[in-house]
Length: 286
Image 1: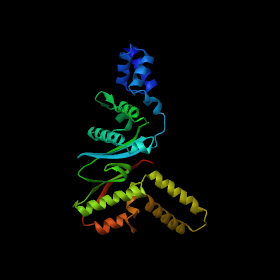
Image 2: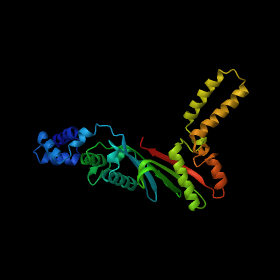
Image 3: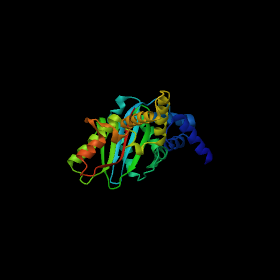
Image 4: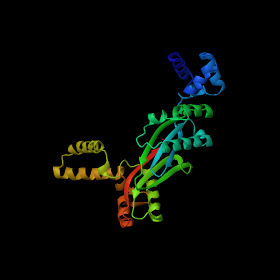
């Protein structure tokens, strides 16, 4: 048994084909590695190994949602031509539906790749798709979010399908009334996020290391100015406010009304609706 597994591993290393395909190839060729390779090549399954070393910088991002959670997955290909094709887009839809149906919020990429579907791992299914389209394919990133009595809005930039494109941005929010006006605002916020790519909702949610790094940089720059301490503190406060206005969602100028921040828009247009952003995220191809 150990020798059989060793042969399967050797064949997988040489061809990149899936475990079951390698096992079948060896069984049909009396354990002869060279003949098994030819067998897999004839089936188109030995192409994956060579192609899997090539760079995959194109591709697309997909969004998926059910009543309990939503997910974003990024799948890379070698060419934009392949990324726009129905075979590739159908594959992203296939992967996304598997991902959303697994009912695991803490799923990481490695665990997903080793998940078995109909006796094959996702990695083996990817290898088969590599052989099918003749390009390297890489599932490079995935994110899953629980939804708890919240509303979800998403936006697809440079879309290939209604849920697949070059950039996906999502927002989870609560509101007293999720009417058309609220939904339109949430969609516009998703567009804003895709355009400006904030790092946190506000300064309280920003990574403390990022804040301290920015503080230290400006302190060193200002310290050499020779200005009084109280003036330095005011300058530093102004620098940090500007920084927060660039990297935090609520402090950014709203893309559709640049004279107001996102927080200003919420306070003026949606205050009575108690609109609150619980979470946002985005995933981009580049």
